[in-house]
Length: 211
Image (cartoon, rainbow, N blue to C red; front, side, top):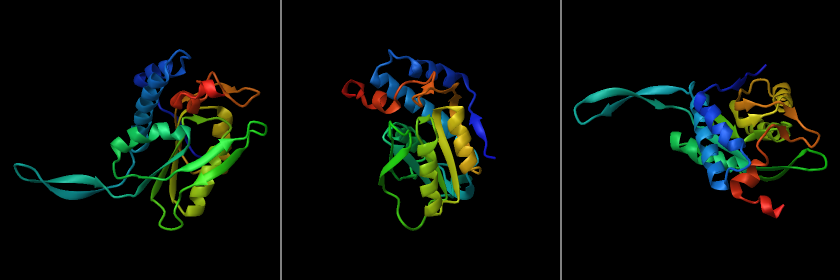
C-alpha cells in the first residue's frame, strides 16, 4: 500500500491557517498556495537520483551532483496551475504537461476535457499536483492516464486531502506515494472537504462571484 504522508512542519501549519481563512484575499490565497507547494515539493523530491559531475569554480574544479531524471509536473486544471511555478523554481528543467478534469456536480465523478501528454517518451517521474484531494476521482483519472503513457514512477501532491480520497487512490494506485499538508476530517454530503478551504480554483483565480 502506498504511503500517505502528512508533511509535518510548523511553517506548513502556519500557512494553512491563512489559507483556510475565508477572509484571505485571492492574492493572499495564491501566495499561501505557492508557499505550501514549495514545502511539499521539497519533501517529495528528497529521493531524486543524481550523478557526479565536475564543476569549475572561480578557484578550482570540484565534484558536484546534478539530477539525472526527467521530471514531469502534471497539474490538474485548473486549480493545479496554482502549484506549478513554485515547483518549477526548484526544478527549472521539469516538463509541465496539463490534464483538464472537472467534477460533475451531480455525480461527483471526474470528467476529462483536455490532455496535453505526448504519445511517446514518458518522463521518469511524474508529480501530479492538485491543491485538493477530495473523492480521489480526478487524481485516479490522472494517474491512469500517466500509467497508459508509461510513466514508471508517480507521486501525488495535494495541500489538503480527505481520508476518503486517500483511500480511493491507495486502492487503485498502491505504488503512488501521496504527500499532503493536511489530512482533514471527512467529505460532507456534497463531497467537499471538511474543514477544508472552499473551492481552491475559485479562490486562486478570484471567480467565486461568478458562481
